[in-house]
Amino acid sequence: MAKVKIATTSEVSADKVLKTKANGQSILVAKVGDKNCAIANKCPHFGLPLAKGKFENGVITCPFHGSKFEICTGKSVEWVDSFVGIPLPDFAQKMISMGKAPTDVACFTVTQEGSDLFIDA
Ligand code: FES
Image 1 (cartoon, rainbow, N blue to C red):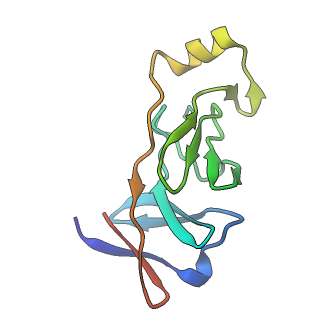
Image 2: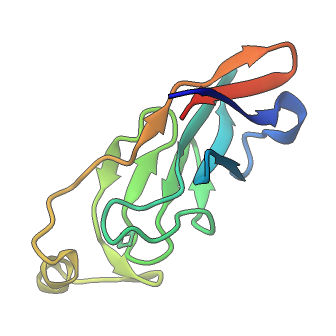
């Protein structure tokens, strides 16, 4: 792993995620409180990108099937509860989850030097 610059502090906000790259890997960065946080832009359900999902209170919602992840920990806080934004009944949630158990998204520790932000990737 190598330390990779992912953004500057002025590019990161609490209102939306910033999509960036580190070693060819797509990364999402946002600010939660006074902390800069980063996760992989890859939903652990089907590996689809999270970047266009709703971001609110430090949690991003996968735009495909509604799984929700904390951007500061990668923790899965909701797993497959909708289809392109339409809520699903329980039996359909089980079908769409395809037997996959709730899984956290890869999370990175963000370090800061001056106004530059880095992760190990
Ligand atoms: S791809 Fe993200 S919840 Fe299915």
